[in-house]
Structure formats: C-alpha cells, structure tokens
Image (cartoon, rainbow, N blue to C red; front, top):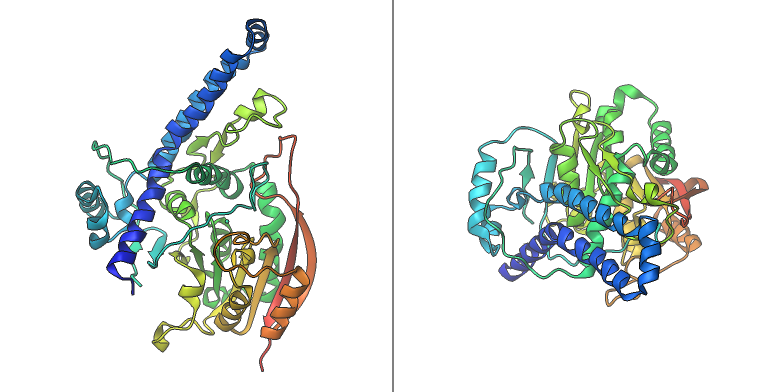
Length: 426
C-alpha cells in the first residue's frame, strides 16, 4: 500500500511522462533550429553550395514531419485521466481539468483490451536496446476500456522535461516501427517467431490453448502478446514503463483501421543517412488491426513492477505461484537489478510442466547507476537458472537488431541468447 507521499510522487512521475509526449514537438523543432543557426555560422559560399543540393530545404521538411509526429504523440496522451482514479486525479496539478475529462470519458466507455494498473513508487531509469549511436545500453487495481477521448481546450501546466525524457519519446516512435509496422516485420520475426514456435512445440494440442496461461513481462507495445493471444492462449502482458504503457493502450484500443497513422521516426539524427528519401520516409501503423483478435480471445495488459506483481503475496489467493503455463521473456531479463530474484520469480509462477522461453542479450540496464545492479555473464545466468530449478534446452544464438533502421549506414547486431527451460520438480 502506497503512502500519500509515494502516491503523489507516482502521479507526478506519470504526468511528467505525459508532458514529455506533449513537449516532443517544441523540443524537436528546437533541435532542428540549431542546425539552421549553424548554417548561418559558416561562410556564405559554403551556404550556397549546401542550398544548391537541397540541404536547407530538407530542414524545412523535417520541421513539417516533426509536427506530424507530434500530432500522433499528442493523441496518445490526449486524456491521461483514463489511467488514474479520482484520488490520483486530485493529486495532479491540473486535476480539475482532467477530472472533467475523465467523467466524460467514463460516460462513453466501450469494451476493449483490458489495461490494469498496479501502483507503486516509480523509479524509471530507462535504458534502451537501440540500434543507433545514442544507445546507452528498456496496490491499487484499475481496469480501463477504450473510449472516444475528449479534447480539452485548456492548456495543461507545463512541467520541465529533460533531454532524456524526450529521448524516451523518440524511442517510442521506433517501438511502433518494431512492433506494429510492416517494416518492422523482419526484426520482429527474428525473435518472436522462434519464441512462438517454441510455445507451440511445448503445447501442441490446439484444443487446450484456451486453458494455457502465458505471461509476457517487459512486453513493450505488446505485439508478441497479441500474436500469442491470436493463437488462442490466455495472454497477459506486463510492462513497467509509462513510455510503453501509454502508446500500447493507444494502439490496442484506439486504432480503428490498418495503417491509420504515419510517423517519421528517423528524422531526429542526420548521421549515417544514405539520402533524404531514407531519412524522411514515413512508417505507417498498425500493420494489422489489434481489434481483429478472434472472438473469445483472452488478452490483457497489466502495469507494474514484475517482481512486485508476481512476488510472494501476504494473501494466498493473490499469489501467482504455479498459475502460469508459460513465461516468455524477450529482451527482458537484463532489466533485472538482481537476476537471481528474476529467476526465482519466473520459476515460482510457472505451473508444473510449464515452460520459460527466453530471447535476448545481457545489456544490464542498471549498470553504472546508483541502484543495485548485479551483472553476470551468460554462462552464469544459465548456471544460476539451473541452481534455481530450471532445465535449459534448445539453446542457440539469434543475430538480431532492436528498433534498428535497416536503411542506415550504421546498425547494431545483438547475438541474442535463445533457450527454453522447464521447471524441475524437486
């Protein structure tokens, strides 16, 4: 149970994330304006040469595309009230405005993909598995349904957001490419396909899929979970970052047709570009309608810290021990502060005969921060998993990128570790 102060901090953090989405446009325009200032600082004859090849005109186009991105991002956070209860709304600085919006929202609710939010004090150090030069290194219960979001004419009070906050928003644009665009299919298939194949191999009887519960922690924008639910499994995604939760809610519940939106995720850096066409290209999403799940599908998203949600509970009826037939971790286990506890939690929530399917690198997210960070090697992870009670099988390496730009002159390749592991009964 959160104290009033912790709850206030949680609401403040959430509204700061909302403001980061809202301030993307001005911040990105400012960065592009810096390029114009630099243009005026070089000799006139050099400026003329650059203008002859269309360099300055391209900056104007980038401005226009930034505004197109901002339109989509602003829609995502158009009504933050849907993510807070009335008490939390009162804690927000612009609470009166969003309370009115919330009341209108709740009067127009229709069923959709359930998003459940478990509040806890939020400490979000956000690291990325990114294929770009800037890559550094990813209670109360409230269920939400989609609605026709209202548009407030009130300008919310702006909070100061940092360059790191804006960088997280830019990363969100690339997550849409990875999870919900046709261009991202190759990258998705490199990881998601073998993971899904392993799940189907472990549970080959299609008639029992509706009784099989699959947990996907660190689900990001939830495409892997959606694919698993489409196959008939009861699927629950789990995500901690508001930078992922807000857009996942939007894409799952508010998109109404295929390729509804077009974004321009590669315009923020002019390094390692082949030409203007690749830099300025638009990416449309979603490539498939999220609401096209078969009738009777059981698919949900729960917000909160993995260890808190699935750790030991005081009341047995709330405990998740032995309740999951599969746990699928994709680019997730290196988000652990203490990998031993991650392994214990995965082991304890698996049912007898259950399977843990993993794919990802070991880019320890909390390394070189003030938080606890236990960094171990791949061999040590597997040795620890064996000691905790797993039998690891089907090991191999998958070469893959992560939110990469396939048309860039620079790309990173992860040698991701893949395995399946079964719980050993002792």
